Image 1 (cartoon, rainbow, N blue to C red):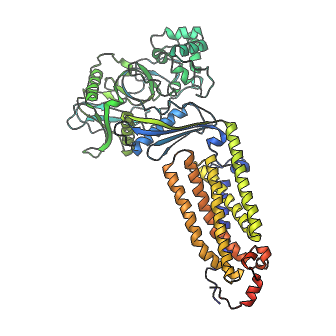
Image 2 (cartoon, one colour):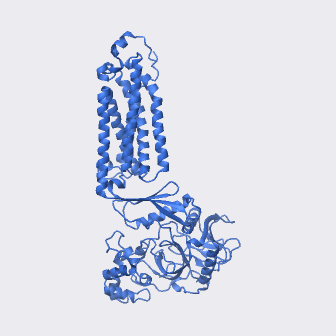
Length: 640
């Protein structure tokens, strides 16, 4: 006799479910990132509202046409903001993009003021006036190649198709710049292989402290901040630093080295408020400290500044060209199939750029000294993004047209430099769409409240299930337990693999999914009762009820899943976590429905207890006779 329609072999489905559990929990205990004891491996990644911290959602807009920025610009903004957030010294900070215009900053464990991290990146073009060692060495460099980092290259006003050789010890590619078609000059950048700030080789004795190191409360004005730093380093150290007119050679005066030693213990926030001459002339102020200064520490374009490149401190002139003067920068292939970066300026920006290249080429105005000259004895111009020098080309001609940077670029480095220049030039602004500070105590209470609500909800569902469905209530209970275990394991694995964090909103999404799961039980069991009322035995009613209820269950879960997907795509912040958790729980509920609920019902239908109306909970479906009597009087009822 052929098996009834819809009949399954329950052992196979249950075996597949067991395999899913084995694989999932092998990933939980042994996947990458799993460390510590078994309790640590079973901990999901918790969000800010559960452990406390700060979350800010920034909405990126374009002030020109109101359109969202491009994906490349938004990613560049995310990287810059991430560098700014990391300057706070907070572990496990997370900066991610959401949609096509949102950046979400999450700092777990601490409450921070993130007002300034969303300010537009400041791009400045500054002439390099002087250069000195920034590694914290005790000897001030003489104006020679051995003490000064090698110039970043050379160029001539004529187009050049070859790359200048890289200076010894430099890992950065050299570039020879030539004018674009119709241009009249060139420059030489040293494009960095990465967007990160250069890492100077600071000595251990002069290494800067971590930004998270304790520091005195920051007063409101610059004068008060400087007074606080003066008190910290002492009058003798401050007086010695103020009297320096050039980088100090402390080897000739050991007492001077001892006086200036306290400057090496200052936090980057304290270094930022020091006068420019002091930042440059004090040898114990290192590039490690300067590179970690807070964002916009050298924002003022009308003041000189100090910044670092490849372990060297540069004294930079006032910014003669700023980011808004750049119209566009793009990576292109020239006629020789070599990668170049084309740089276009606005009308007034081109006038400023021409004046700056003329000043640098002729060494007029604020003159650059011997330590700042390039390989061919010409002054250089530093391209500064925030506090970082991303390029320092040597100017060897007066550029009266658009410039084209060429040299030893590949596609990645050319697009990277173009992206840095382009983003710094775009008038991108960020509106604070959402800001939330959660204390650890409040987060802990949220977690307890969420778990309590989930427990109460599940308990009520189980009590009602046993009261109304009796034996069938055990199916509901086991299904909910298996769904919970699947969801928990998935949360742990997803937290390690894609960084998903469980928030209070996520817990709410999972509680809502309990209602969806309960609906599927009601659909199935009530369909089963309808089959029995039509005269079929409980055993034969199970497969028919499954066939007729399956489509409804799939449709209901599909609608819930579609709602979760749409909500995830259009929402930000905590609502996004709610949608993700709801969708995840819905998918896993479908897995349990197909691999456990119907197979276990098929197995129960073969037991003697299931045939008892009082035990199975199906007795109300037979108002006048028991299920055994219906089976006995209708032995030839087809099960198809």
